[in-house]
Length: 403
Ligand SMILES: [Fe+2]
Ligand SMILES: [Fe+2]
Image (cartoon, rainbow, N blue to C red; front, side):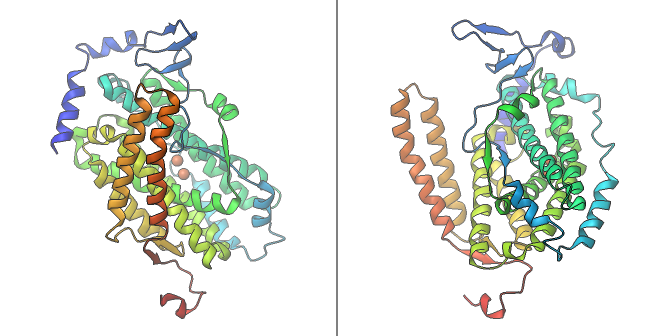
């Protein structure tokens, strides 16, 4: 993998001569950008205050915070209104979550600081961006689960406690990553983000599809990175990745809980509407990850991963897992699937390139509109493209499989 070797060589060259001593002095000199009175560090990151990074600008591809109609959630889980909820299974799950298998897992070892100091140059910036995105995604899960746990306390205490324990796990994950950011002399003000970030509203059923997928894809991302780095220890640039094996089991358990929730609501798993939403959410999650990761290929290459292969593997595995529960999933092995995904990567590269150009803003928007339209057209083609009928529900009858 030559590209990988050259990227690694580039940033290894950029290591400071004297690392341990460099760390304390490497607290980024903060300078005031005189014109706007903004503080920026020496990598160009805007700071809210010393050591606290201003969150990256939100885009259509960035991790979001979600909110939902909590009264409707209450209707879904209310024990009086839903006597058929599989409470035996959910109570057994609650027992599992209470065991808290990873209670002692997230204890940092001594290698974090030194490893962070060794990551310099462009790669340092890319690493920080990766950590910020991951932290925001984990924290987003925490906020949503915490609120669900709070709102369901009266109507379904078992499900409420499970959501609260999911929030416990996500808070741990987000906190661990934020601590990692502090190895790079930066951190996110999560309290400030909670109050100031835009919340995207999704109806409860969409929240269930989307969180199921994000947990499962999260599991496959973490475990695939972990296994790759175990096979290639030279690429283990930062100790955080060593924690991914147990970490991803949290995500897997979260996904299994959401599987139980989906099964408890058969209307989410059968019928034309359910199939169309399954299709939509699978494609949205796969496309978002594919474009995001290709926009940051250097990061994956530095870990010795081929971004395209890594992404395809994660999507294939997630799709296989999802096919066990969703009524329909995209046929990711159909001949046109990956070429369409790759074309979208190229269009997205153009959009980023135009965004970084010196052209006036209105001209950038016009130029970008062409490629945005191309991406929308590709998405539509995939949406109406080949699908695989799947799921564990047999309720639509044998005839429904003949099409
Ligand atoms: Fe997590
Ligand atoms: Fe999770």
